[in-house]
Each structure stands twice: as C-alpha cells, then as structure tokens.
Length: 234
Picture (cartoon, one colour):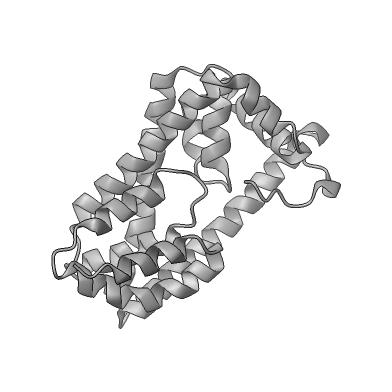
C-alpha cells in the first residue's frame, strides 16, 4: 500500500487550522485514490484526530463526508468512528480532571484566561448539568475546559457521558454532514470542501462571540484580563 497520502495527511494536521483547511483540498484526491484500493487506515486517521482535543480536524472531517458521499467511505462507519473516539477522549479528560484536580488547577492558574474559563465551566456544569455539557462542546476550547471542569468539581461520570454522548453525536453529524451534503450541492469535490470549511469557520466565529458575551455577562471574574493575550496552550 502506498502510504504517501497518509504521511501528507498527518503533516497537514500539525498545521494551524487555516493552513490545514487550505491544504486538505489538494490532498483529497490522493486520499480518495488510496481508499479505492482498500486502504482502511482512513478510519484510524479519523479516530486519531478526534480522540484528543484541540486538534484542527474540521477539514479532515468535511473531506471524509465528501468521500462518503462519493462512495469511497461508509458514512455510517465514519459517523460511528468520529463520535465514538471523541466520546472516549471526553471520558479520559473527565477522569483526568477528577483524578488530578491539583495539577489541573495549577495548570489553569498559570494564566487568568485559563483560570476564568475553568471556573466558568465548572460553575455552569454544577448549576445546569447535562444541557451545559452539551452546549459547551460547541464553544472554542469547550471540549477540553468542559470535561476538565466536570471532573474537577466531581460531576458524576455517567451523567457527564450522557451529555457528552449527545454532543459528540451532534458534532459528528454536523462536521461530516457539511461535506456529505455539500457534495450533493456542489459541482465538484474541491467546491464541496470549500463550502463545508466556510460554514465551519462561520459557526466557530459565532460560537466564540457568544462564549465571550456569556463570560462578560457573568462578571469581571469570568472574563480574562486583556494583558494576558491569547492562550497558545488552548
């Protein structure tokens, strides 16, 4: 099996989100060619990029939806792998937050922004429960902060996983569906990927704005200091 497309795909994942989005259309042709020859590593690649948080995988998921619409991938298996691996990652993060509360809190306290986000997430999970677990998944860094916050405050694992399971199912359907449905509406593969990535970027921008407004409405303690600058560690 020719592993060159896999190597190129893995390299793209390490790039910033915008660069990855620009690179994936060029890689899609090689990916589809390899898939038609029975390469099963594509599902493993989907799992590896959705299991951990903060991996820029939107372009990959949209591309997988495009390829599923064209028959190169099985849409049901793609959705199962994406949602299942993300839920497994959420379970690990929740366990980590509960098992290592001290180190997590020290990590959060290194910057005002992280401290505010973790406190904001933990407080809302205690008050609102499963609905907040679902909603926070769709905010920037929400998957990481939500899972760690739930673990730190001791939110029951079974209840957290119910909310996380709902959220990951919606997220998988949305992310893969952008490519799958976009393929039907677009004239070609590259156009479908471009449409999906554009919609994904727009949704991310809106959710980030709503998150910022929510923290500001909660009071000064929930908003990061302007002097902190962007948190490069997510």
